[in-house]
Image: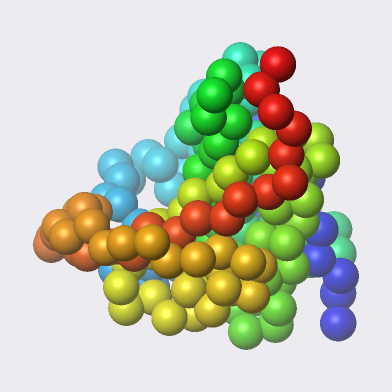
Length: 177
């Protein structure tokens, strides 16, 4: 089995991500927002990566890719970072359908939690899952997240508004400076 790692996203990841997203487009339609066709192309991913790296440069996000060995198999990100009295971020992730069920998602989430705590110095991470996404909920529980509520009609995907479970995890982060 290949090892799982995560690293900051790079412009050269565009073609690999475009290929994964295009292949899994129908499989993930239930879980991800609708995107224009160009999003699933290398050029579309180059634009998305550029925006992610700009957010990172401003301290608003840590956008990463999930790797199996040296192969990009998904994305993980800590976004919407708030400093000051909040010291929190929002965790999001996905792994290609061909690499699910092998522990990559769980290991990637664990590594992202470590980055949030050790590198970013955050006190809190939040995440959302659709009510039916039991696999993602199990990953979050395994890494110490607790469900704290349900937002009805919170997320629009595949032509319908979806209910989502809100998750939280506090980290032994530093006090705000």
